[in-house]
Length: 213
Image 1 (cartoon, one colour):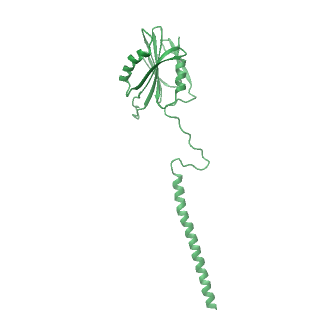
Image 2 (cartoon, rainbow, N blue to C red):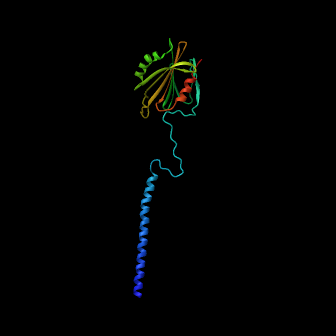
Image 3 (cartoon, helix red, strand yellow):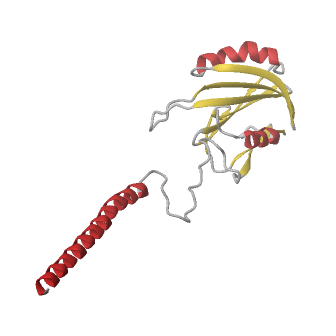
């Protein structure tokens, strides 16, 4: 009987050891699967921990901020004023002033003229010149519009920007060219920026601010 009890006890110890081994093996196996997966998931692009807000999407390139301030530009020669974005870089040469910031640009050119511009004269005279000057010039469309200063001829078109001086990157730009005229004096106001930028309101503010003096 003692021999039988000894065998039974040995069997019980062996069964317990096997069960414990299986249990430990399962835990080790699960840990080996879960930890690498969780680690990999945490390094996926855009992965974030629960409760962390998603990153805010940036504005499309060329969008002028809604809080952009504007200041009045007075040319030295006088004759008119117009609002331009505050803080933009300014250059001037002859009768042309240029304001730039990142991908956007405003050019104000003045000249004497014997007659007011028309849709026909802009299409026949200005478009060919721009076609030679603007890389990949396309989609010209001239129309007559009204702004606070009165009637103007608007020419819209597209073209490539000059290569960036640092990155050499070229951007596809959309252009709005407004030709204002009064008493033998013409002002051409050209606004440009990336074609996908939403600058309708800032451009309208600038062109509506144009005032003869």
